[in-house]
Length: 181
Image (cartoon, rainbow, N blue to C red; front, side, top):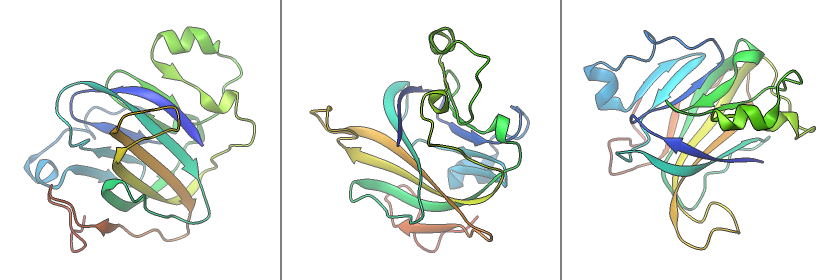
């Protein structure tokens, strides 16, 4: 599992596998109401917490998508990795790059808020293709080292030929099992 402590700000988390595109991530009335901007390879999500705050991003690739007992919001979101070297999970100020780049200096990139966990985790590789992404906003202890409950985010990917959007848990913020994109 990849664990990164990230600064979330500007009320958005971006998962993308194409270059940054400001036009794609512009919120309109409908997307604001839904809390999501969905494109097959560029997803923008409302983190549900206002202001800027630090939190854990837990990222994994599994064969089975199991919701966390501590989730506040839980949904399976179709996602396509169309360009492996653009695959990342981002906030306005920081990025977790989900590909290996041996040309970078890890410490230098971290000082800029850019993390390359796959440079040190040899067993991980995300390849191009369609995935189900289990996205969860959780309240609890994200790691054994954390002593107090806090908000954290889970991004679990499973390779899937025909992923389908599905809310797994009703939440008090507008997503229920009948919600659709």
